[in-house]
Image 1 (cartoon, rainbow, N blue to C red):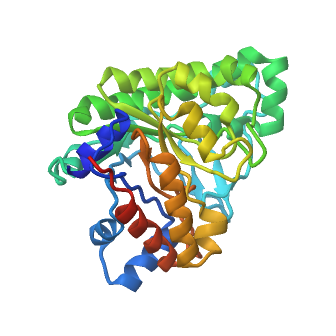
Image 2 (tube, rainbow, N blue to C red; image 1 turned 90 degrees about the vertical axis):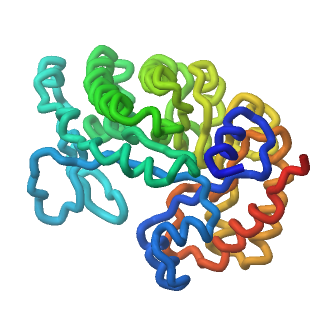
Length: 348
């Protein structure tokens, strides 16, 4: 099997030749690994055995100068500062009226340039599983625009305002993704989106609020991907197990990257309850094992997890968070991927 066939078999819950592997990493770790191994980007993906290739549209809209001390600006006009993606410096719609929500300068989907996606995907010759589409983090955009505590209050006090915000945000992502898929869906395999719904101790919002406000918009995106014949996989951090049945109910195909140390996310339980309905991606402990352990421990824990997750297919091996941090020892990451390749073999 090639990588694409291996991944699509996993989505179909069919045991292929071996468990597919996934590598997501921070820029700092990626550059460190290339430097220490003397490899380029594609050489490093091959060394890790990554079965996926992620193709993204590029921003080509107007330039918005950043304020001093800020590091990036979202499409919705939110400036952020701090480590990584940082934190928002303001919540511009925190006190907005419904009229002000509608009058807000919402981004134009034409600002995203998808013209290179087809060519980038075709260079892989159908060998790898291609991920694309806009990340579409509408839950995070909603928090940025209102502020989290304020958002929760408005879900009770001004639900029509929250609905209007979500409609504008997700309309943007729907249009952006439709433009991408109109141009290149036939060379894409997976629509990959991201919204973090969990904390270390449980979901960030209850099931009732999730079903009322967020699930209909997730369904819009999932239905869009399905209309183009794509699998849809959601990146979701934290302990969100109580929300998984609702995600299955809107025909989500895959979850990435499961965090086993969060409340309710025990891999054995998640596999038993949902492993025949969802592709499960990740769950090899990034924190206590990959960062703090030694290669021997990494190999032991990776083998234990493979024994739990492999049966019946539907599993992709990888770290419990997509953003492998720079402080993660390279030898541990190599031990993880080498163990997936050695012991993640199905005996047909």
